[in-house]
Image (cartoon, rainbow, N blue to C red; front, side, top):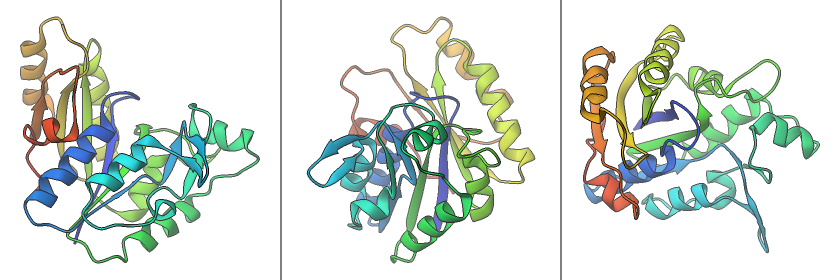
Amino acid sequence: MATYFVSGTDTDVGKTLVTAGLLHRATQAGQRTIGLKPVAAGCERSAEGLRNDDARLLMHYASEQLSYDKVNPIALEPAIAPHIAANQAGLTLTLDQLILNCQDARCIPHDLCLIEGAGGWRVPINAEHTLADLAKSLDVPVILVVGMRLGCLNHALLSAEAILRDGLRLAGWVANYVVPDMPMAEQNLATLKTLMPSDCLGVVPYNVDVSPEFVAIHLNLPL
C-alpha cells in the first residue's frame, strides 16, 4: 500500500486536479485508490453539512468509496488559511487529530492513497504546527505540484528544499500550466527539470476546460 502527500508551491496551482488525475490514472490501471483531504477551507453549506468541492472530486475519482467525513473530516466555511478559519469557527486544529483521521482512513484496503494538503508546504494548522508536520508524522513521500507562472522557479526550488530538509522523500513533481501565456514557458520548464531534485511526473498544458481525465493523460504514476 503506497501513500503520498500532495503539496503545492502555492494555493490555486492545481493540487486537486493533479491529485484527482493521479487517482484516475491509477484506478484505470486497476489499482484500489483512496483520496483524502484532511482539512478543507472554502466549504459550502448543504443539507448534509459543510461540503468542499475539492474533497468531492477526490471521492469521485477514487475507486474505494469512503464516507465524506472520512475523506474530509475537517470542513471549514471561509476560504482562508485553515487555522484562521478554524479560529473563527471556535475550533482548534491539532496535529494529533489530523494524524488519527488519516490513519483511520488508511485502514481501508487500498493500493494507492493520496493525501492532499492545503495551499503550500508550510501552511499553519495552529500556532505550533503546519501541514508539513502531518506529512512528517505520517512519514510519507511527497508529490509537489508546481504552478507554472511567473515566480515558479523560486517557489518550486524553495518548496523542494524545505521538503528534503524536513527529512521526506520528494517522489516527483508536476508542472501544471495555470496561465495561458506564460513568458518563456519552455525555458522555465527546462530550468526546473535541471534543478529540481526529483523526476518530473508530468507536464499539464493550460486548458480552459481542464478535467482530471485531461490531466491524467499527461501524468506518470510515482515510483
